[in-house]
Image (cartoon, rainbow, N blue to C red; front, side, top):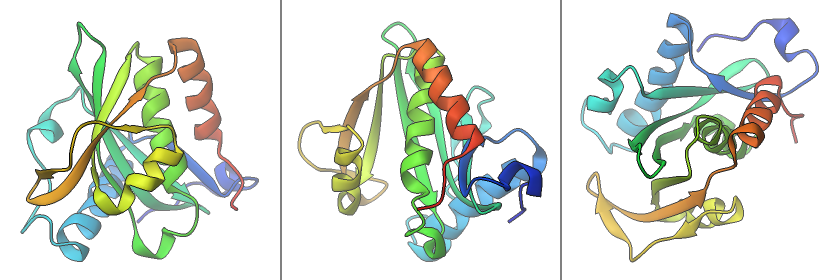
Length: 178
């Protein structure tokens, strides 16, 4: 995984931002591959799907002390209702206790809100439901099978655009390591 410039991380430990360069996109996909293919075996060879071919899909990368260590993607499901989906949240095993996951989720929520979204849904692995509940998400219905594993559908109301933009900028600047 590539490192962020020293100047960008000199005073912060964790930051989340949209992957824009080839290197950042490569980091995003490499993190997902490590977690969902190699570690968890959710997918046999690749976790990529049609959403990865869509230019409208937004890919985020989370950095911990300058190291690309987490990723998440988001995309609009229904423009008329402002419904977005967040998925493929992945944090490398060695960084799971770093506090990176929450800023990554918050950045996805803020980004969709900044773009005028109203709500976001996600299919959460059962072991992570409590984590998402603490971040303000609510469960919807009963657990279901998603990509062959039990998941819980969850929902969050997105912030208004101005608030979303402000939060996204703050997360791009970074938060101290805990």
